[in-house]
Figure 1: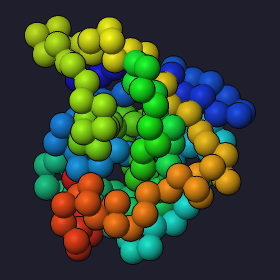
Figure 2: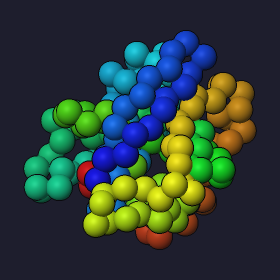
Figure 3: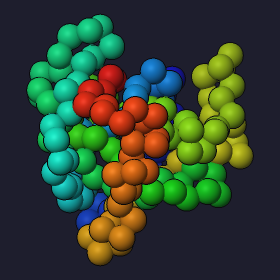
Figure 4: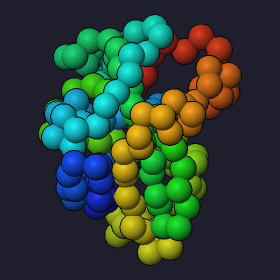
Length: 154
């Protein structure tokens, strides 16, 4: 399902349709979109192996970087982690962590997001705020429910 999302950074604003994928183990964003919006990113401690939904390896290889972004869904705002990789025609995938954080009501028959969960706005956060808001290793492990997760599926 695709939903409209407004992206905001200190340098640019863009509106895009993004994929909501309950089978994606993480939230993902393309490096090209980050460059266009001039949003920074950080290295992951250990590269994360990634497989596409069809079982093939992603053409970018292992994920080596991430960015934490502020996500507003309706009236709620949270900081979520986005792994950076090649997404083909998609620029962003909102996966299980977004679904878990906001528990949005989705009208599957119409493939729409309930009005109470709109708009969806993804914003950059400054480096100092990002460092303070970054998910700790313990929180990251708790989100994934596995202590040694080294892979992601999109």
